[in-house]
Length: 546
Image 1 (cartoon, rainbow, N blue to C red):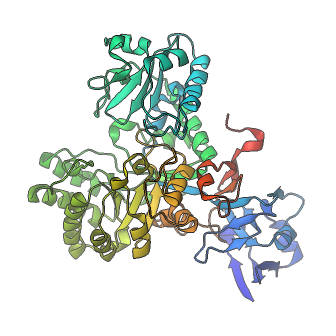
Image 2: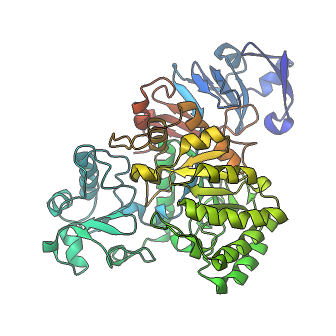
């Protein structure tokens, strides 16, 4: 018999469960069990626990906000009393709640009420239908935007940007623009005329209509201010959209112009939100003159000052802006810049902060690792779980250097929109044994849906069906990367990342079997139930999210 003893902190009383051949039985006094029955049980399913053995169970039980038993349906049913909510899964697959290790969360709500999101739509007509529906819901003259999350290459039927005629037809009475990264946009006639451009030149607009720095160009400047009440509603609407997509935890990595992260604390005063959102320290260091103030800011804050739902976790994604790279970076950074980057990194290490550093190109990664090896000689990095983020062209040699330091890797869906030569070598990462996790980099530069990410890394294809990576990973490896590995990256592995006794009850019930459907269908998986801390935050059957 393999006994598991649950503490009073989990159940408010101690009882003993034994498991034999996958079946849990109760070894407690009946009157004790009666007063401590689970709040909720899920039975008759396929529970992918994503534990160290990737074991599969049929059912699980939840008390308060944590999992108290995992086993077969008969044994779990025996734990229930008349007050227990029973969810019959009818054979459906359950996975741990998905964690996004790199998202610009607080930026998403700023204009959410004005947005038509075409993330993940792989035909032009489906995207245009979303815009048309949004326009029909707006008053004439109100602005509509698509704040990124899409690319011209995502449409399987007809790649490319939208024509003036298409956009005018979709939104005939509303100014409309669709932003691509921070480089350009496609706009209809009303929007083009509003910013003083000429519709005769076509629908595509670049600088100064879209730019990389706040306020992000003349088109974005047309967006009307959002009231405090509307902003709070936008936050709730964004969280609902992410829950519907299967996300239960995200790591916000944005900079100060993206929004006020403390809004989440104020909104949580009467109870937790339906999404766990941890964040980075908000600052911008543009040069050497900013280093003293940056170091002082780091010294005056406390690393990993989080609770189960919110809080300051680490530093990134831009530790030092002169080290910022894009795919056009081909030369190493100067010794001076690397040394300045090292100084801030050392302050973070001394304070116990996690760092997640934007690092697309291997030449940049080598500069970062040069600095971090010096930091490691003073303060060991492995306990801090620093990560290199994006890692488009990381070499196997750099993977080994990072692994030797205890540095982790974070791979993001933004790469799915890039050509084959910029695809992260995820097979080499997996085979090396380094810890790596998955995220999106939503919402401007990529889609927010995690099953698009999982589909990309398991098929090696973009959502348009084209193969861009000849060496994908397995479904099991991908799911671990989006759950258990991400929990480790974020110092949350004791509470999240797998469906095990004692962990927080974050889970997603799927509309199809992740492990056995044709792999191309992973892109199309839809959650039917999402739970955060044992609370149902999305239920497709009751249409909790429109």
